[in-house]
Length: 181
Image (cartoon, rainbow, N blue to C red; front, side):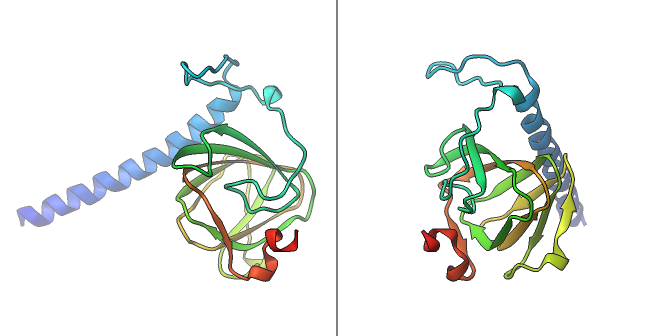
């Protein structure tokens, strides 16, 4: 009886902590975009960024930790997704109707929709009917090696935090944007 009670207590504690962690990731991610800017140096790992301070590069394919779709602008906020350790990315897709075919990443990731509506689903093949509309503030996960796909209908900004190194593998290699370059 005591062992069963202990297992029940541990299971409930783990569930509460997992839910709290997901909420904390969303809050911290949003806070990184809204707290006043401060300089970051090699000796001072603190970082704050206001949305207007983000320097969006031109859209380019192949950034580590992304799907590799050429319509995506990527800003690395922390870390390096190609190396071991924590990283955080901002992804911006300005074009409507961008389709990201089914793929998976090797690392465990948590994503938050910052702006726009992101259409996302898990599965081995792109299926627009299965996409869930995720408005700003929505959080979803990309567990290691779990296939997923997405689409935009307007401008979208997503924040992704993971533990690198991150790689991307398409279910159908013919749909991999890297194969088309």
